[in-house]
Amino acid sequence: MRVARTSAEIRRQLKPLRAGKTIAFVPTMGCLHEGHLSLIKKARSAADIVVVSIYVNPLQFGPNEDLDKYPRTYDADSRLCADAGVDFIFHPETLYPANGPKVTLKAEKLSDCLCGASRPGHFDGVVTVVNILFNIVQPDIAIFGEKDWQQLAIIRRMVSDLQMPIEIIGAETVREADGLAKSSRNRYLSDAERAYAVAVSQALLAMQKLAESGETDIEALKNEANSILLAAGIAAEYLDIRNPVSLKNKRKLNQQPARAFIAARVGETRLIDNMPVLTGHANTEESL
Ligand code: AMP
Image (cartoon, rainbow, N blue to C red; front, top):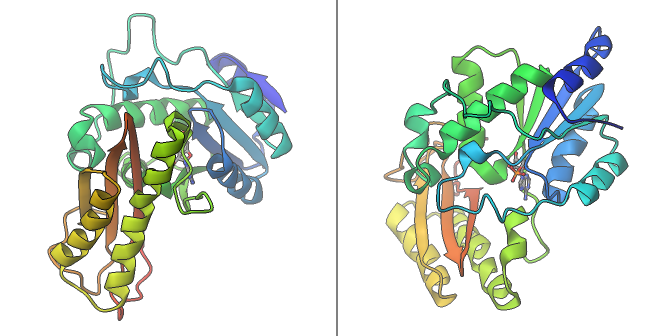
């Protein structure tokens, strides 16, 4: 496994290897866990060369967010990458000019809702950094987690709208044994908060089950989920059921795909999660 600390270095390393080989890319902010490792595994089986980037991107953090305290665990990350068969780690100091970028991308409509509503500029920061990383690594394939569904939907749209020759692959959310979605931010949770946090995935599962039993009324599903959250003392920042591609709110469950999304603070820690919600008689696979 080789490690590059600058754009020039990773370009130089990859250049002689490109001919006739495919490159799969997994962008991360580090603090790697089994969720990231499942993306790396998919990358390993999809391409000849696997590149993982580790970069905490300042552009996607708001002024009062956790940029400074975001966990940085590079030594452990690099050991995990080596064990997982990663070929290259790209771990840059920065990706922006010293006085900040003057030209950036905008995620437009898909970033108005869900996390975008409370994190203005977040997805602009995401599409800008992913675009920069794509330009540097020039992968054939890039893997993103369904855990950050809105991000995955926006990246797919970026690649399609900007005609980037990159295949985007989504990877299922990896969870703790009790259902909590694995996240680098879970380590902020105290033991007591960790016990309550499971209510987020339980609320999503409850909506999923209710829908499978034939309930099509979105409000009934949301009430069920809210009661589970409230019993755990959690107030949702949002609890929505939306079209998984357009991210538009659904008014009623029907044969079309739908996905439930929750963001909630548990103590100081903001958690997000999502799951598909299908009516008992709809078995259409989501085509994100
Ligand atoms: P992050 O380091 O949080 O920016 O995440 C890097 C990538 O890992 C993103 O594509 C995430 O969606 C993905 N990811 C994070 N947590 C999980 C998880 N629990 N399961 C699957 N993918 C995940």
